Length: 113
Length: 110
Image 1 (cartoon, rainbow over the protein chains, first blue to last red):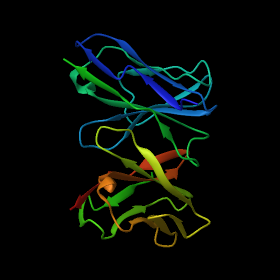
Image 2: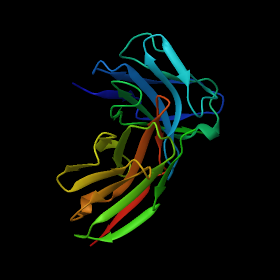
Image 3: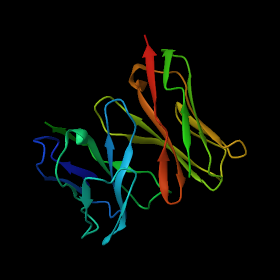
Image 4: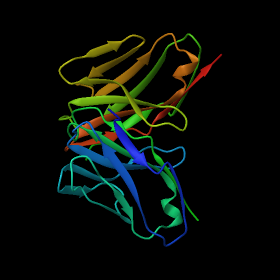
């Protein structure tokens, strides 16, 4: 039981490049979400999904796309990287959206130059 | 919408003393209140949670209390140890989302 697995752990992008952050969970959780955490700051919700085939926007969705083709996987795509997207990205999953604790992945530290 | 306020933003306590972090929420329909601990450079981890049908929950040195009337809940850590140094986040559910507090940096002084 690996929990929530995120890849890569570190990434450096040039402005304008695109990339996909991977997130996979093996707990059969219906709810998955992506957060970004800027240095010394709290968690801001980017996108979330309440089940396969269903996604929705969070607080800061601009510049990011998501898809949920399976229960296990919830990739986050950066369309055209900007320096403002330099952050640590966490994927989290749970049995549902708001009445059970979240399990977080170990994070992806992204730097856009 | 829901607003979760967390105080203090930084808390410094002597090792062995107790620490208390408070959060207030605005949505009277909120019924789930988790607390997360985030060590430096690590992921947030759930340490304790409480549902609105109970007023207090304990797990060894940590406890959470909930006052639904006043709409606030608190994290209590007794006999603090160096490994308690971290940022602690509270959250409350509202409209099928978790709304997060801004975090409290807990510093344990030797």
